[in-house]
Length: 147
Image: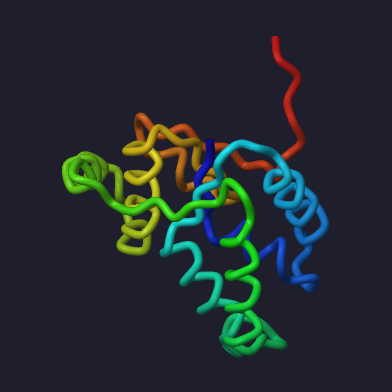
């Protein structure tokens, strides 16, 4: 069971991104499996914010078009939206000492969600390596052979 970071959604959707083909193939394959896939609201909101912003992308998409993509993802079997539960604040607080820059607060929130639900956080962002107890992987990197 996995939790998705926004960067994978952005790469999978935007053909202009160099990671597009690999990310799209990975997301399509992931969504075709029976295993649950968590789409947290912060990742969905970041997807909408980034791809609709002329500051972030050269040819922004309209919010209605992007929202249609979100609805398509959310309609897939096995897709769910995990939200903070009772233990979220305690887990989040335990991650605060590992935040070295304010922009990592959102990462700590996703890490806390993943820990809370015992999920693997999938992201192309290596900053997640800083959080103890978090299982995370970058599915865009080539798989390393097991030893």
